[in-house]
Image (cartoon, rainbow, N blue to C red; front, side):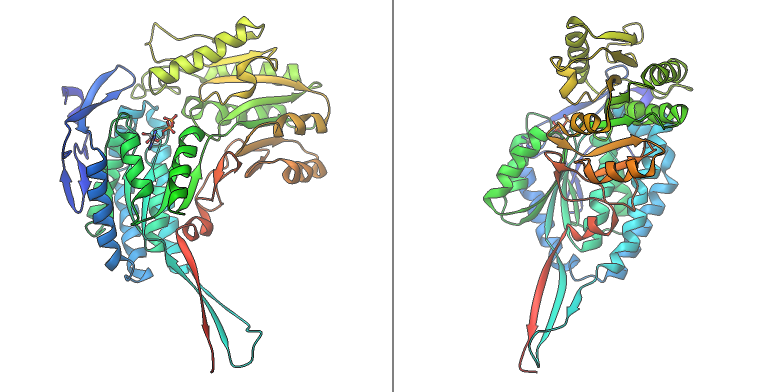
Length: 490
Ligand code: ADP
C-alpha cells in the first residue's frame, strides 16, 4: 500500500469465506487501482472456482441455521449494520473515491443511498407475510407462506460499489437467505469494507462471503456461482451481455434470477415544461457518476419548439457545474472514468458521431491535461440514426440532444430500444404525463424529475434491462419462494 492510502480505515485486503479473511487457494493477487492516477491502492486475492466453491459450501452450511432465525433477530442485525455504515460514512466514502474515482460528495451520497436499503430492509424483514385464502372446499384451509431461496450468488458492478451490494444483501438477509458476493474487479475494497461492518453488526459466519477475483477468473467463479446445486438464486447487476451469460448458466439448474442490466434512458422535454427545471434535472440524470449509471439519461429528446432554449440552458449549466478532476479534490464534481476500456468506448462513440456529422457544443475529447481517464463533459447535437451513439448505451459524460415534433414521435423514438429501465418526462400537461406513464415501455418513469432511485419504490427494468425488482417490499420477496399448504379433513 502506498503512503497516501494508509489513512484509509476499513481497508481489507483479503477475501472473506466462512467467517475468515483468506487469500486465494491457488493464485496470487491482483492490484486495485485508483482511476484518477493509476496508482495501486492495494492488492487483493485473485480467487478462482475452487475458492468460489468453498464460499458456496460455507453459505449453504450457514443457511441451515440462519433460515431459522426470527425476522426480529435479522431485523436487529440489519439495523446495527445500518448504524455502523452511517458512523463510518466518511471512511467508506474515501474508499469509494479511491477505487471508483467519484467526487467525495457523490461517494458520501452513495453511502446515504446504499445505506437506506439496510435501514429499509431492517423494517421490511418483519413484514414478509404469508396469506390465508378462502378455500373453495368445505372443511379445508389454504395457507400460503414465504420461504428463503437459500444461497444467493451476487455479482456486482463497479459504478455503485456500495449500494449495489446493500440493495441485494439487505433484501436477502431480511428474507433469511445467505450469500456469496463477487464484487467487480475494479472495486472490491468497498465491498470488503461494507462486509467488515456487517460482521461487526453480528452477521454470523458463513452468512456473507466475499470472493475477490480478477476479470480473468470471473467466468470460472461465475460458473460455480450460477451452477452449483446449492445455489438458489443469482442476483446480478451489470451489462446485458454478461447478464445473458449468467442467465444461460442459471437456466441449467432452473435457478431464480434477479437481473439489473443496461438501460438506454430517454429524457423527453415537452413544450409545456419548465425548461430551467428540466435542464437542472438533466444535469443530475446525465452527469451523476459521470454518466456511468444504468439509469443515466442516454437520449435527450427535445420538442422542436423548445429545442434551442433547452440546449442553451443545459449547455451553460454543463459549463458552470462540471468541474473535472480527481474525486478527492475540493470542488470537483466530475471524476475520472473507471478504466481504459470505458474511456475508449466513450471516445469511440463520440468520434464516430462527429465523423458522421454530429456537432460538439461542449467538450468532445479526453482531458489529457488532467489525466488519461478524464473525459470532458460533452454535449452533441445533429445526431442521426446511422451513428452508433444514437442507439448504444453511452455510460459516460456525453449528452446527446435530438429534436422531435409530436408526442407519438417522441414515444416511438423512446421505445425503439431493447432496453427498458428508466425514463424521464418533462411536461405540465397532466393528461400527457399519464399517457407517457402508460405508454413508455420502461420499468420506471419519472415525471418532472431526473432522479428516481430510493429504497421505497421498486427498481428494475423490462425488455433486455432485466428481470425482477430491487428495493421496496418486492425486493425482499424476490428472495423467497411461495409455499402453499392445504389442510384438509378439518
Ligand atoms: P461493466 O461493463 O459494468 O464492467 P460487466 O457486466 O462487464 O459490467 O461486469 C459486472 C460484473 O460482472 C463484474 O463483477 C464482472 O467481474 C462480472 N463478470 C464479467 N464477466 C463475467 C462472467 N463471464 N461470469 C461472471 N461474472 C462476470
